[in-house]
Length: 100
Image 1: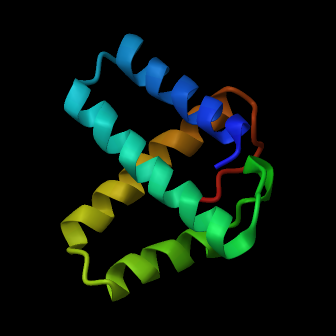
Image 2: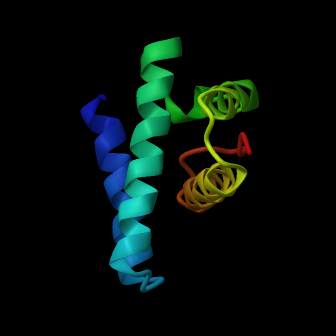
């Protein structure tokens, strides 16, 4: 995973931890979800800047998770993680439109 993505994820996690006061368990879950998502992007689509992430990329990842037998509850948590992440990116003006 490119260093810029690692930094972007870490900034988001720091915000959730310090400003939102999320639990360490939530932070770890967010980190795992985002790492898995960006690893999938890297593998399927190559290095993809945030502004180039499309809804179809997210749907492909979620479909793969479902195909692997992941429970709907876990998939819904990953959707929630991505919604929070992209909402944060909108506030930071890193993107202009959320792919969610």
